[in-house]
Amino acid sequence: MGLYEEPILRFAGDRGLLVELGDEIAPQINKEVRILNLLIQRSNIQGVVETIPTYRSILVYYDPLEIDVKELCLIIKKLALQKQEIDLTEPKLVEIPVCYGGELGPDIEFVAQYHNLAVEDVIRLHSEPLYQIYMMGFTPGFPFLGGLPEILETPRLPTPRLQVPAGSVGIAARQTGIYPITSPGGWNLIGRTPIRLFFPEREEPFLYRPGDLIKFRPISLEEFRDIHAREYGDSDP
Amino acid sequence: MQGNTEIPILKVLDPGPMTTVQDLGRIGYQALGVPVSGALDQISAMLANWLVGNWAGEALLEATFMGPKLEAMEDLWISVTGARAIITLNGREIEGSQPIRVKPGDILWIKRALKGLRVYVAVRGGIAVPRVMGSYCTYVQARLGGIQGRALIKGDTLMAKQNNKDWAGPKEMYFPYDLVSDFEPELTLRAIPGPQDYHFRNSIELFYSSTFKVSSKADRMGYRLEGPLIPKDLDAPQSIISEPSMPGSIQVPPDGNPIILLVEQTVGGYSKIATLIWQDVSRIAQARPGDEVRFERIELTKAHHLYKETWKRLNDLRERLGAPSHRPR
Image 1 (cartoon, rainbow over the protein chains, first blue to last red):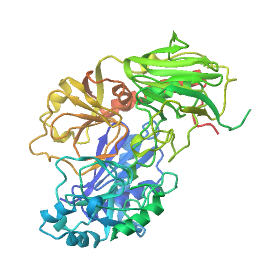
Image 2 (image 1 turned 90 degrees about the horizontal axis):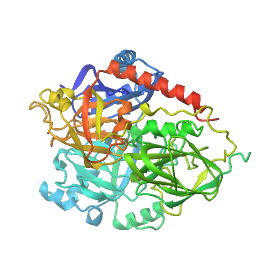
Image 3 (image 1 turned 120 degrees about the vertical axis):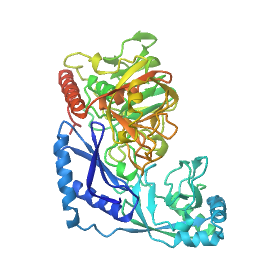
């Protein structure tokens, strides 16, 4: 089916409207999501509190005291018709240095074996593409990236780890992503970035937003240590 | 008037198992994966603040089951709401749900919740913590907000933004017991079908007619329930493309045990059979492991009617207590 002709609106409780634009993970559907999200935000609709764009849907939080849900549905359907008329701004390209393998990427051997590849091939294949951030979630700043080469598609771990260190880069199914904070996680860890991704005190708390592009740059363990020391002071990774 | 100079007001003698600084949540960052967090029982949190003349979103404490033991360092007005708890002031038992005047050296102890799980402690003028991403609330997993992003520990000193000891007390004393949870161990929760109720056509009647038990896996992220398994329809997908969830979303993983999602979650990949109405998110958050839960189907129009009615009563109450409607200044 792919992209729907018009969005399907579903009720998510008494304060949420789920706007569904398609039924698969695809660049075009995600682009439509970001366009419609931008249109909703620019419209400054009285009573709309917050919007959360994801792969193929947007959750619109509203205050029922300020807007009638029927009216909100009409406004969103109208905006969806206009969506071809705007262009998104150029996405930002963010380069993320990654030290692949070893202790920092304990599952890279498994990923390589799983696909009958050398570890170097996994590194090359993973660091070549320009990935687009389809959505952020799971933990603060966790980017779900689209564009992983099909040959690297790897099932998630049978049992999630209780603690995945901040900065870890992982693969699960056709997705790749970065753990910005230490958290549990079930993705195959292939490397780690030494840079800080989360700055709660800044106006822009993360280095990237949904829609931005990510490029991984392989670095040595030495470089990892240097950058890490610079980013975090001298504390251990 | 001392202006905005922060002053120490409370010393933490015993933090209790999990006491954090909360407010009504971190709004506007869920698109970046930052959960809303905030007080789980929003109604009790607002009432605690209003009782001491604060606006609803002031920083206050949320305690879990056993509360903190606090020593006052100033003349203060304090209120305690939420779970029915044994509260003592200098060893003498006192009633909650009212403004309490304390003097330097007084010891306020929320000994233990008798009914319900979460206790709110508000201080006139609010607890002074930095605003991080627009909110005071603590999100422990990301070490965000509150006191250094963590739960209270013994020896912490809580600060106030300003001392409001000259406050005359509430305009009129009144507490709407019927607006807060009744804290009974059997709860009927009102739920609006969707967004993926169509994945459960064959089990939806079972869902609304069964009694579930709150499991021990119950925290600020969500409450896992146990009871009859709610199977998905055979033609429904195992999981859905990850999409946003909200406090009160009832997701059903492939194992068939529903999970009521709460405030520390932004996205998920399981179908959601229904969503609790706003008022009942506050009520489930007061339930304890072992409590029994049933769901009552409610249509959106009816839910919005109830929402408006509840807010009208909350606003009337706020006015009667003389609390401001918005963040001051």
